Image 1 (cartoon, rainbow, N blue to C red):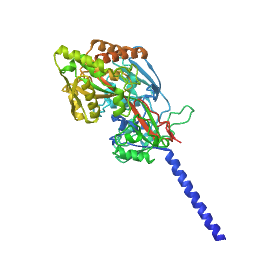
Image 2 (cartoon, one colour):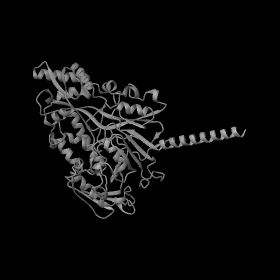
Image 3 (cartoon, rainbow, N blue to C red):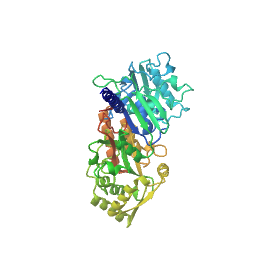
Image 4 (tube, rainbow, N blue to C red):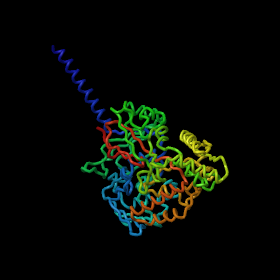
Length: 532
């Protein structure tokens, strides 16, 4: 009898031990946020955060003076408040007194120190240093000078008023970094970063795995006074194949997938862009406006039919955008377009009455009669990724009397042709660098004509230029948005570009993931994310 009891006791202990180990493993898993980055990242230095693959981990490691919320409103970050002079030329930022760098022995006995205004002076000078060659130096083009007034006040003076400037400062380039670490020749800052963010760097096996851990000294708290972040760690893998990453997500090894890839698009969403019902019990889908405008641009200095505004207007109204999005993009996009400014930015307007094939055909018939020709022909230059849209447009435009030749060009060659003016009609897209409509309207300002700027259409209009320059001097957000909309309506009327659609972002996560959110910049911030 004693022997039997002994075996039962051992079994109970073993079962309890296994149960506890399993529970602990699950708890640890619930505190780690895991995602895959199919594009290998080259650096964790915010001075080189030029794409989303780098920006996303840097968002967790670093802070700047200001930050954006999910509605793209400027919010305090390390700067708790700021004042702007009446002429819009001077910005004074007052820093929080309780922001500390991640721990490192280079900081001395305390292994850390508080961030002061001179740290921003150092960090910004580093971005401008020609030896550093940061791709973010352009964000200071309109800056006259900056300096630390004292430990808690940092001042920036502009050469000319630029109301979108705070948006530029929200970019990862403008993060604060510590001189003690960056200038230590024994430390490779690109792979051993020290910042102030909600997570600190723990481990990086390049092209394999990157691990960030919770920063216990992080300064931000939630609305209830609880310290952020909620998670214990962030784990990033680097599987190059998107389909493999998606399978890992379905198996529960990843918590989150961003965007749609042809390899899994038809499996995860329906034809009208909804989450496939077979996943409704375990996955969740979030969609929202994405600051990316897809368009077709006309080189207005190129000879041919596109010089005539009637032809441009006919092309613009001669196809059904919503039908195109439904069949070719599973409905993920906004086809009720106005001008170049996408949904989510001030100055945006839209219409659902643009499609008018009868009026479009009348424009072309009028043009043919006036020019004494029976044929209107245009060459559309695009890359292979947009061939399906180009062929759809080709068929639709044939119905209104326009012959379209589709020229498929490698992306690099297409960009070069746009910059040099060698293509007359081209596919383009514009993703916002900062959350202000000026970013889009700059594409049509005459002083920005390519190759010296992003005005690839070579559009020139005195009224547009006047409004554009007036908007720079306008401090009132409401009045500036009115000017933006006037410019956008002028673009819609003159049609230097056909707006195809405004893009939408899509995110997929498991149902236990909370607080992830979505924003028009498609930025990833994990400090408020938790798992149930």
